[in-house]
Image: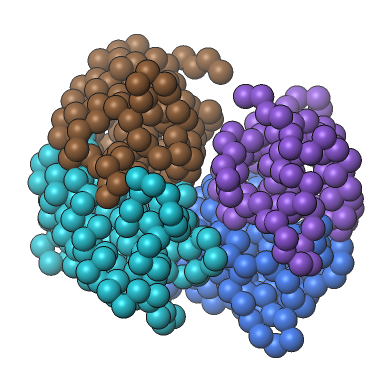
Length: 150
Length: 150
Length: 150
Length: 150
């Protein structure tokens, strides 16, 4: 599907918002791709991101998947709208055992208030990628709420 | 509902597994309660855990919710079984704007292979708690997989 | 949690809306309970409701669970608002093998636009009830959309 | 993705199982496509399938979506395995206002025990199709359970 962003400065606006997410710096995630309705986030492994078996923790994986989906929606929002996650569902299909995660969020439906996105996460191990998670997420556009920007 | 753990040493086993989750140390989460089928995790706020509006990031919240549900299931597993998250769904019902998160996971159904848990997350701000997230999670018990323990 | 309905005539309004759902008559479902934020629907078994093993089909079960949650939200809406399901997630925890299903929907959070409900479904077989499904559902209140009432 | 069915007679086995689902005959759903890992089900509108606004009820839509996903998984199972839905999540992205629904289920990951599928539902009105629902579903393969076949 092809989308036309309401705000021509959507790339800068998305990058600026991402830069304000303290958690992305803490875990070491980077914004790899910002297109209309599509956002990709990458995250290299470090032991601090592990669950008890030494793989990426599902919550870390979900953190970048949620941000990828949220920013995919955000690319299509007007300049004065903020994005909040309403809900998501994630299936962890394979152990996130590897050196790097890549999460891609894609808008599949935009509405007056709500946007629906899909996300997919792959884990790379020695240059082989495994599709380790998929999900669906609902986002809401908020306009004019004090204290909530971008 | 009341459950009888298969392993009398379930508290120690759960605490030991939690201690191996690198991500819990990184974000500063602590294991507050371990009972048969019920686990509670707490997490004080710090700016590194924020999303772009300065609240707890949904992914951080989901990280402790997922672990609370996973360990709730784990308390009922036999000593040689590991736990993996199959999938979960989370609704973010209010902004996680506050000083501390508390996530409680509870087993609602155990089966031969799969366990279903509910989780609820509250955020505290100046001693007032808000129910900010709820969800349902499916866990699988793995026995005898090399490289995967507790 | 206790809720105060915006419309004092919420019981009649809910019953009238339920009566317009053709599918409820087709499958034979009945509205058993309408309270502020809580709705219960019952459904006796008949072979036309089965999946391939002769149990209630998951979709039939989900149909009454979705309506129970939707009408639970609807009880709290103003008189001129319609309800639509945004999304739901359901876990089928035991085979729906029995004579009768009972679905209870409960509001757990109301907001300006969105309402979050939980639902639980029990199946009765020879007077023994089994908790066979649980889920979380998001509803939206629509006001002033032509062609969409109650 | 391309899959090789374990049972060469997967088409006949899937059609035979579908024919045993009483609910499909009751609502008037038909099996349109059975390929390795992909199943499509169609359903013409009739007033008995409606919710209160005269559109297809979300539960009816979910019923065929769930069966499409379940049978998509089933096409890849060995001849002696039955399929049960573990859970699913569905987003209703547009009112199911039209003459006919088409649900397509696709396998995205197979495992030893669990299979993950996606499903998408379109509604047709005067030859124009709208993508009205999407979701993710987890299925389990059961082997050797008495009373549960195909």
